[in-house]
Amino acid sequence: MNEKDTLWDYSQVPSRVWKWYLSPDGDHWMEVHIKPSGLTYIGTDWTVQSGGGYFGGFQTFDEFLRDGPIQKMPNHIAAELREHLEAHRVPGGATLRVLHLTRVDDLVLQGAYIHLDDNPITVSIDETLAQKREVVFFGGSIGIGDHQLSFVLVFKSKQQGSDALWKVHGEFSFAITPGTKTLLLETIRDEDGSIRVHYLQ
View 1: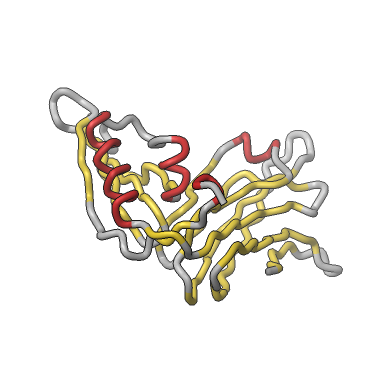
View 2 (view 1 turned 45 degrees about the horizontal axis):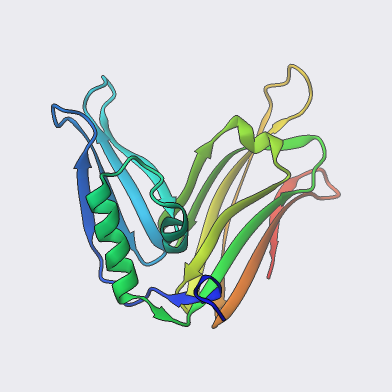
């Protein structure tokens, strides 16, 4: 097996935070935090009237090492983060893929708010979601053991001129063993017309 096919265990990577400034006056900055599930980006912006902290995005360790950062990041911090992850990971572990399918023909996904073990991994209100029947909410290494996924999904009607929205929420627990695992979330319409999300693993 070559390195690109290796499963990596990141459970022993020490927590750490890197911070860098996005404005010359130092009133807008970004931090990246190492969490058990991956990298969480937290921004703080005082350059606008509604300034304060905001969610800057989430990235699995594998995604960062493969694609680089999702936020503008100084090269020396990106290099330090890469070195930190590669120095403390070990072969083994498990990977998880969380896939969502919309099986209700007259609805499209407009917003997704996903938490894995109380850490946000997806916060998205994006018109491009409506163009995708399948959406991957998570894809990367995950610690072996018990986990919890919670979600709020917002759907809108395909009907022209309709502003109707449907909000579906839920949570479930699952166990991870060594190897690869896929959780399939399906949005369906019950016989009574209600919308719900169930999952298969």
